[in-house]
Each structure stands twice: as structure tokens, then as C-alpha cells.
Length: 63
Picture 1 (cartoon, rainbow, N blue to C red):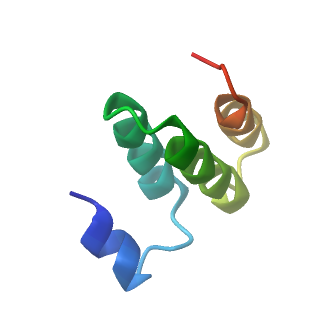
Picture 2: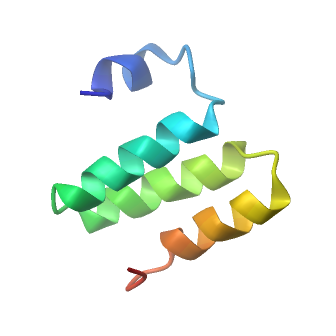
């Protein structure tokens, strides 16, 4: 669903896109890929509190 937007690179720096992608990957049963998307969401977030939460989600075993 988000793959064409991600592949285009047009919103590469948009943290909510990567967070949505991570959530969808988790729901689909791809935890490893989701962790990478959570990391990209954190890297692109300018909000310190949000970045900390995204990094927490990036940790293995985090619900």
C-alpha cells in the first residue's frame, strides 16, 4: 500500500509515513522489517519525545 510512495522517495523525510509503514509491517507479521521502519521514523522526527517513543518501538520484543 505504501510501497509506491516509499519507493518514490518524495516523502523520505516524513516521519509519519515511516511510522505508518512500521505499524502495517507489524500487523502483517514482519517484525524485522517493522523495526527498520520504526528506526527511519525516529531518524526523521524533529520531536524529541516522539523520537524516543519511536526508538522504543524499534527495540526487539516491544509491543
